[in-house]
Amino acid sequence: MDQEFDKKLRQTYLEQLKQKNKTHLSYGTSGFRERAEILPFIAYRLGIHLGQKSKLTPGKVHGIVITASHNPIYDNGFKLVPIFGGMVSRDEEILLENLMQQENINFQYDQNGVVYIGRDTRPSSVELLENVIKGIQQTGAQIKDFGLTTTPQLYFEVWSKNSDSISYVDYICEKYRKLVQNPIQGQLILDCAEGVTGVTIPQFIERLKDIINIKTINDGKEPQMLNDQCGSEHVQKNKQLPKEFQLYPKTRYASVDGDGDRLIYYQYKDNKIHLIEGDRIAILFAEFIKERIPHIEIGIIQTAYANGSSTKYITEVIGAKARFEPTGVKYLHKAAHEFDIGLYFEANGHGSILYKNHVIEELKQKGDDLMINFLKLSNPAVGDSIANILLIEYILSTKNLTIDDWLNKYQDYETISTKIYCSNKNIIKTNYEETEVVEPIQLSQQISEVVSRYPSYRVCVRPSGTEDLVRVHAEGPQLNVVQQLNEEILKILNSYLA
Image (cartoon, rainbow, N blue to C red; front, side):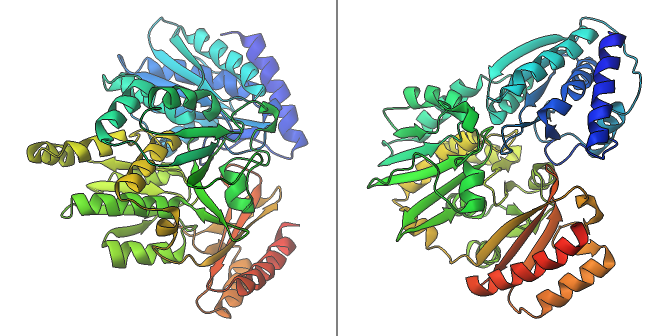
């Protein structure tokens, strides 16, 4: 190990943490994530960790994506990719956090193990990539650098290699051609957030151009504008149209985030933006599956951000099970595996369809190739905006559904989502489902007292797992009342977090 290099990086890292009044970084809901200048040491140590870990699973590859997803361009981060997708275990998270606090680490050098690497379009990703590679090289493990890739693509490539499958683009295009019998009607204009999806999706557009019409905006020509006035986070949280938006007839609109795992559809009508968030995507998928396989057990995993109207529709109209888990794909992905067919979608549009092997075997016995191809088109490793776009476009075309039809399935409650930036977010503790604040007790009591005065309304308060802020989500039948509730809660929180 290059002790001097590690020592120098660590010293700079500790000094930067001290300036931010921090002693360490936590592995949050989506990995390590911070201002990019703080991360070179983390990158190097993660490379060593992955190189060592890959030796423990002969014949299997591990992966890492350098990205901060929907965060501003000055942030960056790392998502570690387990051999069969999903997220790393809590035990490994603790191990990684401890690894970053150790002064010295020991490991063995040998030329076994393989690590796949991908990165997004952030300028800082290049330097961080170099440090990850240096760390892996210290262990002797082999490296395959995929360059600019979406997070779902790198996840799929790891899963694919470990499952003896084919490459990402080939796999999805092959399955889609088997699924689509007639060309998709109309066109989709996709806002790529000036991120890496703009690099990846042209391959799909070219290879599938005879059956689906996709045009892109904010496709990376202005990389310095990553997630700035564009992308799914901007559209969903700010309820604003992305830059470069133009209204055309018979056209659908969608936005992805900076690393291509989140997806939001929307419509601009009557001078207002109408959002189609993760809840509605899950419902569209679940209804289609239920019609084709009515006897199967379907579970839809939601978070506290799920619109209450969607939960009611899932249980009362579709007849599926709705289950709440904490925010973060690491919780949702795991819970979805417990059902014959499990769908998990956060409100931000990050989600996928998972299924058990016996479901495919039953479909093979019935000769239902359509549903086999439909289910297999979903990314088994992680939420994938490109795969989900193709599935959505297929269902809308096959069922002859318009965006209005989709929106009119049920009426969303009015919602307001706000952020409070702070350095002490972790003083707030919630229950497991993140639907209630439990600590500080006085804060919990004050919030409960306010909400009790608003029957049929609710509020969700939780510290972000990826940023130094607290998220507040208020919901109810009337917007003016939701605004009033939200203002009361913000006033209370500001007194605690000042």
